[in-house]
Image 1 (tube, rainbow, N blue to C red):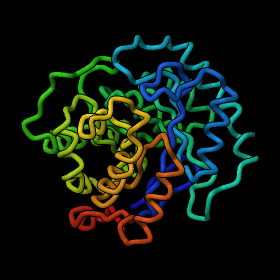
Image 2: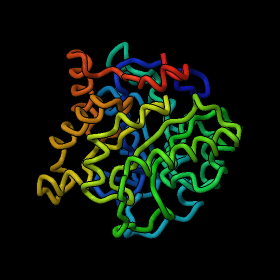
Image 3: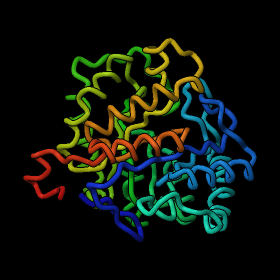
Length: 303
């Protein structure tokens, strides 16, 4: 399986990738956001040194009890980081030879106006938390040669879906990704440029999320990298009775192991150093490689 980026390709099977979270905002749910550009860059550099393969930059919180940031403000926050990042990473040392280097730069956003503004600034991956409601972000990524991460959700971003119930959440995920992959390909985006995210905690309740972890391997049939956002999620807090997100890192490590063993190619985390150790040990013990499904192999969509 190949993951296509603007100027490079990533081939699987390989060690699972670690995506580090950088919040250039002041209302992150986990309390690690900052509007101080120097501080955000320092956090990103530390994550790169700790082994992050992808740096996922967000300029507004995904929290649904907050108003959306104005487009101009979101672009301004992105631009400050993205323009300074090449000089910072040039002075940074990679963790090991398996780490993607320089780390892939990801923009966590959903509005096409923002996507259009940040793609020319060195963004390789658009992490669309909006669930690709139409084909605009796919068209923008196709034109720029960028990759697109499609997250499962329903309804508009920034609107809580606390009452959503799924009779069969995995069947809903499969139907959703069938539709969105087809939409992206019809917009001109190569299938190899697509990454899938099951959207843990988005329009899902605790048992939905736990089902996704137990049955994640069903999504391997798409032959695309699965990125699982494991870090400090509400579901972990509910299972372990931990109301503070910062207390959930041990639970996050368990979720990394569960996701990777069932096919996750990438995990999204706040605490990169621990996640790197986890995926490295999973690899060393024979549990850390991407295992494509028989369906993907039969279609020639994975090695």
